[in-house]
Image (cartoon, rainbow, N blue to C red; front, side, top):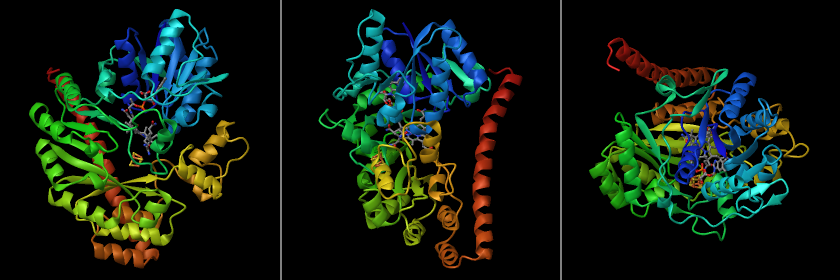
Length: 500
Ligand code: B12
Ligand code: SF4
């Protein structure tokens, strides 16, 4: 029996399906991965159906977050329509089916809640042996809902993600193609390697998926688990061998600095890996000793979630407990120690007043430069506390059966088709309001200029702020595009010179 695993991240790479793929492979299965790089359409889906038929795939597993919901429906419906022959079983897994299993079951045959390695393996083994599948833990069927199994304590038991692309497929343009060197050169990244050293997060911010998942796993074992330093280093050594051009390691853990054996990890990393790395953390875990030790091992940059400069918003709305004076102290420390920093800010929060936004701007003007900001728009992910809060407060409204149609979904997630500006929030875009622009300009302008701009909003300052905003961001976008192209130019150059 064969399974296809589909990724909708839009990248040639997905830790989720590449991890599942390795686990199934280790246990005797041969999964085929499909990376959806362009939006699914009639032509590429028809092509994909043909490939599924040729490969004799009988189970299709799709990984999806809430942002991927519509694309997952399109793919599922195309597969279920029986295009190019047999109807196949479709199983959904990942954040969205975990938080919205009932809604997901309107489209998928089976939904996997929470961590999927054991559940998917059991499903495959049972299907292959012709045994009953309905009682498998973590799995929900249309006529049966099962509890989640206990969390795996020993993460070292899992094999490293499967980063080989040989024999796997990509949806590009109007077709579904077998991945070859050309596709890898164009879409792949062989100089950056992303890795997770843990699962779970000790916090429970109201807008975050962890907020929900933690409740799902209550009494099911330790929620935050860490891989051993030896296991992490073994994966990175393999990556170094496989990708000789590697120049940056990205630790994608929610709180990398919270690793209880960070000293040992840093020591081994320095000795065995020695490549620049970047990571995420909250200020609480930042200490001078830790940063110096990590810098010595290769730490280049840190991402920190600030979300809002208003302590009221952080405490009451997001349930984040980092006081601004502590944050400022850590920000200054990182600057002194020469670590590049990026701060995440959540924009477009209907619970924030003008005063709250001004507090964010004021806080950022106290940060020593250089630093950068990444802005996210507050998205009310179903299942999170802030989502429930917003419904209760009438900020988002559900029309009809909240789980019924695609249109409803768009209305409350992508927040379209409505005059209410709150519905217009998007996951990654920030509204181009005057104060949002000023916030994004804080890394580029002096405190004095920012203060002047916030105090004096008029047609002149609006034009000025827009001009600077666009100059900075267009310039940065242009630069990143140029660097992207630079890679291609280099590759073409190599081909002409015959140095492939
Ligand atoms: C890596 C990552 C990304 C990468 C993914 C690329 C890549 N090459 O992997 C990038 C940077 C592209 C990304 C982008 C975004 N991300 Co992101 N990302 C993550 C992160 C940090 C890790 C996910 C991961 O790979 N985990 C490792 C794997 C092994 O675990 P897993 O994904 O949970 O999968 C397990 C189970 O879910 C299950 N499972 C998963 N898929 C399937 C499929 C089947 C068939 C089965 C049976 C089981 C199963 O089994 C797996 C193994 O146990 C998580 C946070 C986190 N720590 O989980 C956020 C997270 C997934 N991202 C999130 C968000 C919001 C986004 C963005 C919308 C952000 C934005 N504003 O643009 C975009 C959306 C992009 C898109 N279209 O999907 C949210 C999702 C919330 C939600 N409700 O959907 C998360 C949970 C962060 C959070 N704490 O809220 N992200
Ligand atoms: S600290 Fe980050 S990962 Fe943890 S709950 Fe808060 S937002 Fe989510």
